[in-house]
Structure formats: C-alpha cells, structure tokens
Image: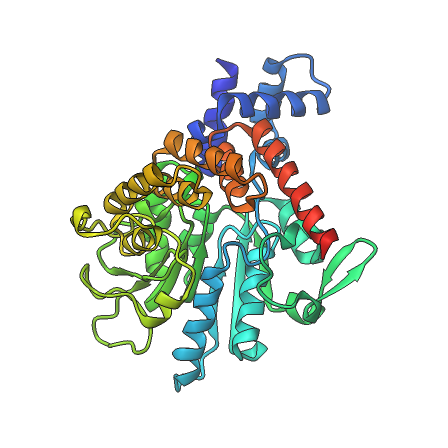
Length: 412
C-alpha cells in the first residue's frame, strides 16, 4: 500500500506512467533512498517523502532514464541539415532560428542539434537552442560538457575532433558550442504551459512513451501552441502513434519520425514531406538507408500479393506507413530466409511501432542470436527492457553494448 502511494505521488508530480516505472523498479529506488536516509522502514520514508521536496527530487532522479548519446539515430539530424540547406538558407528572414530540446537529459541531443546546424552552414548568431530537463544532475553534466566514449556510440555522424578535446576526464566539448545552448531545469509540462516563446523546431524524443496519456495530450497541445506554422516537430520512433493532430504532415524520411505543422497560407518548397497518403517519397528519401516508420498517419495497407516478398519492398511500405503490409512481407521473407538477422530487426521495429512489444522482443532476440555483434538489435532490446521496467536486464544489455563498442573502438 505504501509503495503504491509513493508511485502515485511520483506520477502526479512528473506525470510518469506508473506501469512504465514498474513496481520492481520503484521498490528498488525507494529502498535505495530509504537506506541513504537511514530510516528504519518504508513507512518512515513515506513520511519523509511527503514533507521533503528535496527527497522527492532525489527519488525522481533514480527513476529517470538518462539514456542518450550524440546524434542518436542519426537520420533526424540528416533531415535537420536538409531543412537548413534547402529552405532556411534560402529564406530572406533575418530572425534567428529558435529550437527547443525536451527533455534534454545530459545534453547530447541539444549539442547535436547545434553541431548539425553549424555543419549545415549556419553561424552561431543565426540560431538559438533552449533545452530543458527535470534532472538537476543531468543539467549540471550538460553544462560541464564532458563526456565518455559511451556518448559517441553508433556510426560517427561527423568528425568529433572538430568540436571535442580529449582530456583526462573525458571528451570536453568546445566552449563555443556550449554557449549555443541555454539549459534550464524544470518540469516539461509546467515549462511548456508557461512559455510564450515561439519555436521553429522542437525535438521531443523519447518522452511521451514514459507519460500517462493525459500528460501526452497536454504536452502535444502545448507544443502545438509554441510551434510556428511550418515548424518541425521530431518525436521518438515509438511515439508517432501518439501523434494524431490533423494539422501536421508526416515527413516521409526513413528513421526520421518528424512532422511539419501545416501553414495553409503558404506553400513551403523543396522539402520531401507527405502531401497526402498517396504521395511518393522524394528522390533523396530513396537514397537514404531505409528503416521503418511508425503510425504517424493511418493509411490503408496496399495489397500484399502485388509485391514480391523482399526486404527493400518491405522497407518502402514501412516508410509509407503501411505497417500491416510491411509486416506480412517480412514474415513471408523470413519463411524463405529464416537466418536473416536484418529481416528480424526490421520485423521487430515494425512490431514495436505497432505497440506489440512481446513480438518485437522476440524478433530482436532472434536478430542478436543470429548476429551477436548487432549493436542496433542490442540497443532496441535495451530500450524495450527499460520501458518495461526491467532495469536489471536493460543494464546488462547496456554493459554488453559498451563492451562491443570498446572492442570496435580498440580495433580502430
């Protein structure tokens, strides 16, 4: 009963979904803090929690998942540079580009946004980035700007030596980039509701999956108020199903998971966005590596029997939002190619996008069995376990990823 009351208090404070937190994870965090506070039992800790805002913050710190790295997923930052080079640099507007990162965790995402804009050709005075997170510790680390190798996992997006200097404490981000981001600590919902500033671009990735449905609706409504017409909204790969606003166009780019707020009074040129369910992907979209998109728009599946059972076709259907058709093609492909780790990865991502977590987990596990060095599969499985509240298993997988990355780093 006491543990349930604590979970309710945390949920009401930061809108975390109690089911996402999980009773095991909550119990571990409460026990850790009880011991740190040198209290005899959980009832004593519950009393402390109700009378101490500082202790509530400490408990929340243990429950937050600061899982992030530079240029996470890659493709959103590819599209950000495309937006800047194909549209923003052609605009006669002299107003600086306004960007927002929520939540910003330990700073890797907003700093990635800044570096991407610099790489695209913008000067520092041509944009400004606000970044918010509820964690005091994460904000403090973000402001320090010193990171370990774990923050640079995955394929390198750019030459980090241009922006980081190796020090005994880690990789230190240059001061010129750190000054481009305005970090703030606070509750995302409270911040958004009290904000009047308008933004051109908002990154809100991997937040909604942890929140109650009412909180998701409030945040999306607040974002809609703050995002200018024609502005871009980036979500996480598992969150596009929560985006049901009719005044947003889904950007058809692989593994980008972004939307443009419609501006009916103006036609915006040169960007590959969807203009209805029958629109074709742009030539640029066809040249990028194909990865499945989620249910941003609900489209009628194309007849599967008209397609060959191959992975490129499955990816194309997934990019167009035809999850059912893409899933069936993957399943048919695996009947003929049962040892294809790539197919299992794609099928797992499709199941995850369709909120079928058990099937997704089985596919990721199969992909990892077929290729023990599949970092993509391991990352997907770790995030899935974290979202299910299995922090022990998630931590074990994360350690495996670190060992794999260390091995690859040493080889290079």
